[in-house]
Length: 442
Image 1 (cartoon, rainbow, N blue to C red):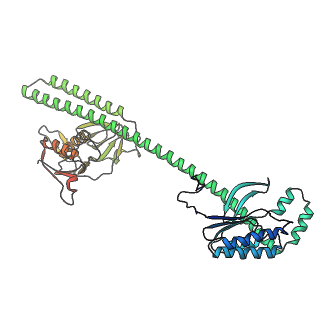
Image 2 (image 1 turned 180 degrees about the vertical axis):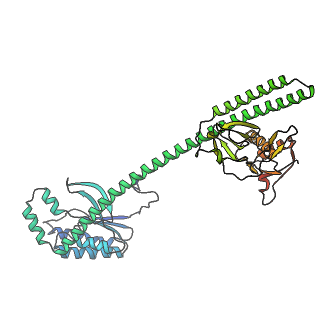
Image 3 (image 1 turned 120 degrees about the vertical axis):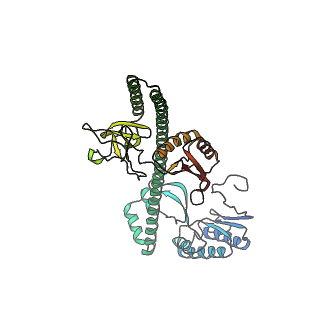
């Protein structure tokens, strides 16, 4: 097949030998005319092979040593095969002799092989098994063909214990091989199923992660938009109040404008709560669990804030979330265990009213890695406002090195901030060019 350019039934990188001569002793060439018995015919061929064969030859024997006394025939066969093996001549021989099977098992460079045979159907399976000695199955085949059982039993009594033991070993080997192959096939099926399940789980996890990221991103964008609108409206309202103070506008107009602001803030809170899924606190809080300045999470808004008042008799209290001071119920809160940067202090205004300072849960660092410039600036805007109100001296912005686009966008934004005194890239040990240190004005 190889020399004809055909594909051979073998693995990649297999090598084929080029035989200059092929010597085959197959069939029975006995002749009355030439006074040749079966054994003599075979042996004549063997003698001619031994004279002519060399290392570039392939020698094929069919039932080597057959046609004479089994003991002597087996001994001759072993001697012939040993001689050819020592000369480095590649040889294949078929046999039913147990002695030759044992010879192949015990001799380096000589390998047993057999063709699988289904005793139940008396048909070959055409599977070549390398390394496994074949079993003759004479008794089994005879029984299937109808030979009386008592004759088979009597035949078994005639074979020696050694031969019987060897045949039992071959039978055990065959049974073990079949069992192992079945288990191996079953294991292969299990591996395929596990691989498919693993792939399916990974795909589901990726889809869930993508969905989670999309929901969080949309929620953050909506929250930032609502906060931005509310901040702008609050700034406009404060300017209007200052104008009223200068122009000495009557109290009724001021109160009317205050009511408008309150309605607008309530509308913003409802808009934010409608965008978020209702969550349940991990632990139902009691009024005694909360203190002024505690960091909490408002579950309906998915925002962190600071407790700025004690709960009333109905469980409502005020929470400061950035620039928004909202009245929420204690059942909508969850305590957040974060380090406190500053403690809330009580200050009295000129009018004698108590005002709460900006509290406490602001981190000294913000991480903007993986965000676009627009997303980073929107998040940074709120963070710097909160940090400045919390009287922090400096903060650390993590933007990474990468292409430098995010760092450039952050620096352009910082240049326009009036409450930023200075900013610089991090030094060795601070994050180098991957971070920016911001100093606030006092």
